[in-house]
Length: 384
Image 1 (cartoon, rainbow, N blue to C red):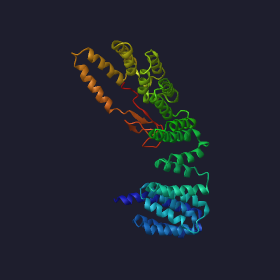
Image 2: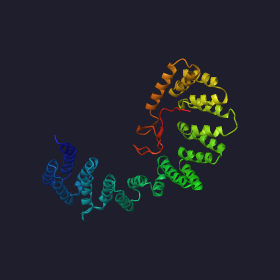
Image 3: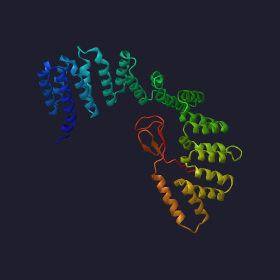
Image 4: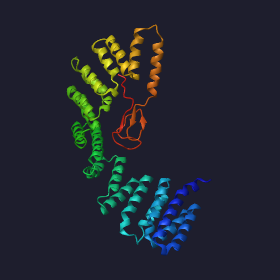
């Protein structure tokens, strides 16, 4: 059976349903409409879209109640990736002199979606702006403009539109705006403009107090200029924003503590952090700290006890590495270390909490579902 025929099946179903609804509402026109609908449907099934479109345009001209037919057909074409056909349908509707005003915004939106699907962002932007002129409260138009500006990395325009939506849904829009300011902060960092970097990061935190990305940027900047105490405070503050994200900064936190006079503060902090959040799997990090501050045997004793109650792949590998060095004659430990290393390479480090997208690279914007800040550590273990 030809592929194009299968693609026409949903179109046929939609048309038959719309035909029934229209004929029920307008029984006086039933005969004419039925004849024309089936004629158009026959053209569609014979892959003669041009002739079918001509018939449907004439139908809508004589009876605008049939416009749902065009919307349904356009959406099916768009879903099938046939943007040229969807565009032709909606352009034909918008060009009709008798177009009722109540349908204009809807058609403009549909045409905008067509252009988005075709990758013509400038045309889509113009249409969505036109919708806003006619309907200032159109959330569809504003959300699509945001997507366009996000795709084009025009963060200032994205912020302007998003701010209008903030009051209506701060819990959703706030984090979006925060990431837009973080993008601007990244640009400032590249230019070496520290003042603007900090300004944008602080603006991000005003729109979303739990913006981990902004806190990391401020902490990294403090660390870069040698203000380790300030950096430590900022890094440790991330726990209150999102405890899982502590694994994104644990190495930087260790570096800052290493620049300060030796003390037990780091060890005490890590143990307390592990107690508060067992899923962080900090055993090997704590073992490394113990090895440096006390001895290798102290680290081994800690890991040996810890993995009995809270086993982790990274912690086990750390322990085996220690014992391998202590018992050179036992080659089993070397083989086991290699096997664990292979297992870790095959593991997924990050996973999107919204759509399940898996990756070994951290993204602030999920490449799959376009949600900001949803990609988080999956197997939350550190190799320190």
